[in-house]
Length: 306
Image (cartoon, rainbow, N blue to C red; front, side, top):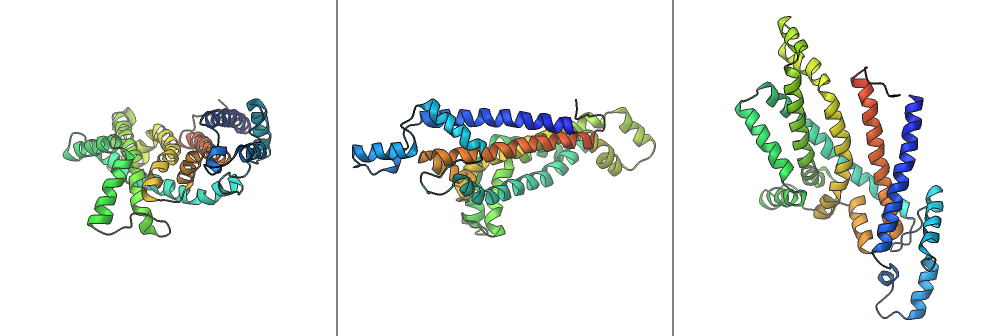
């Protein structure tokens, strides 16, 4: 376990270094943030003064070295637009994004896992065909279209939920349903295919021959042996949910990290974008580590040291 964690920590450092380096290069290719901060009629003296203040008059390699030095100390600098520490702004918005992502993932699991199991248990039935059709629809529909349709039905026609805002469970319903649509479909299809493969195994036929109840065979024996690829997808989907939440947060005006990062990119707020990308990368990496730990719990044959 110790060697596994040390290896993962080393991999985390390398991945974060590569991600932040790529973000630094891409942001500096987008243009000069000074022109976004000053009024259109600003003079040359004002532009040069602000450029020196931000350290943008230095060569790019010098700026990159200073950037890595600050990141090593956990300092991403102050937001150019808000004049506050960039990491503090991201941490302030992080609970809203986590609430949305966790709610969407929980909703996807609650619906997708039983749906996939029932579809596999009744292969070729009407329920099976309906589950496959719904899964295909959920994976093919883009998030922005799903969000607009749910907003039209739930907020405009039925008038049950607000179209935007944050604070109550009613504000969470439509964004969570929108964000859960794709992982719900992907997990349902994976559960169905995994269950179909395991249901034909010899030990399942043996369990049936011994007279074990079908419910016990499906939920205790079959599902656990089909769970490894499902756990992998769940871990990856959580990271993808944070990326998909950017679109969802913009549609429903959800005050999360994604919406904050979109405006930061638009305003060329380099420190704020870098801090937001760092936090999302760390969450994604942590999710992958938890997936590896779940492997060892679900299948004792898996050795973390390997």
